[in-house]
Image (cartoon, rainbow, N blue to C red):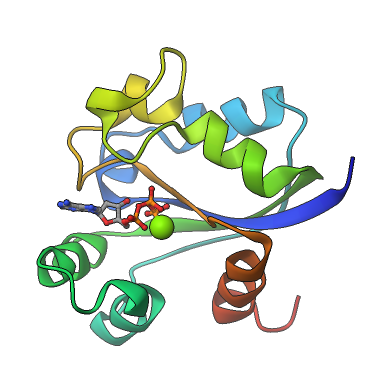
Length: 136
Ligand code: ATP
Ligand code: MG
């Protein structure tokens, strides 16, 4: 077991529906610690460059508009195998394909409005933590 850090975002759809506490509790109940937390409304520039890997995808413009539509909660999570475990706890990108009990199965509204983000590898985690928490 390796203690890892990963970046989690509670997305605007979940913040708008008062799910911050509910989602944080899922992580805490899974022995994942919140190491840093910041609530903010992302700028267009921040959302564009955070999701730069998807720049050529047809959903990029819509994704950036959605991610800047309201405040998000940015978190650094820490725990054993936190990157992979967080992805499991979140469930599949499309809630229609997510397993029972996962955050996206329980709370996501659609493929785009899917309530949470989680880094997809230790390399992405490092980049994403540094992107939002450069002093950590
Ligand atoms: P995230 O990066 O947010 O953790 P993910 O890694 O599961 O999600 P990605 O493929 O990186 O999924 O897509 C980033 C985000 O873009 C998704 O979480 C979702 O909000 C949105 N998205 C992905 N695919 C589509 C699509 N086909 N149509 C609309 N939105 C999409
Ligand atoms: Mg992703």
